[in-house]
Length: 161
Image 1 (tube, one colour):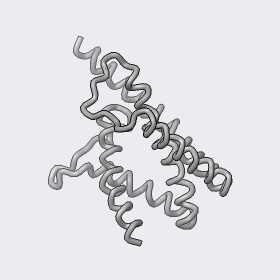
Image 2 (cartoon, one colour):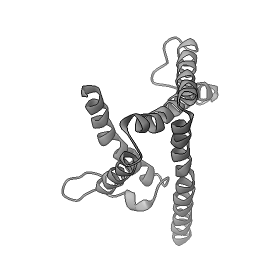
Image 3 (cartoon, helix red, strand yellow):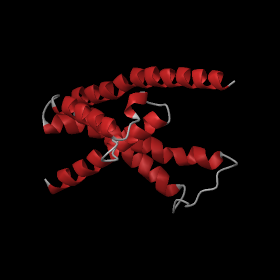
Image 4 (cartoon, one colour):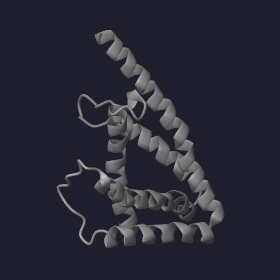
């Protein structure tokens, strides 16, 4: 339980700020880019996180939720770690910190992450598929919100001209 509460605290604090930053960068609906005037918190992003958490909590048991949601995070962990190989190819890449043991450590992490994902797909294909469908459901939301942001930015630029 301590582990769950610790992880939950991190999610409750971090996830709304990710939504807020995405909205600020035009990658999520603009209304999420709002700071409460009194508390100075991303109130609408927190509300969005609460609604999304409620939807997820209603999808099944804790184990199902873990399989459906947490397992999909490992896909993105692997992609993030693999991103270092793409970054290092850029001629302008000047990191403040270099990964120790490169390339062995990132490769080992990507392989371990892939093993976790494959293991969950084999052990529980139905809940794993539902988890992947939940992630895929975000794709149209992303394109719809980013398209609106592009139109907003175009209108802003045309008004300045």
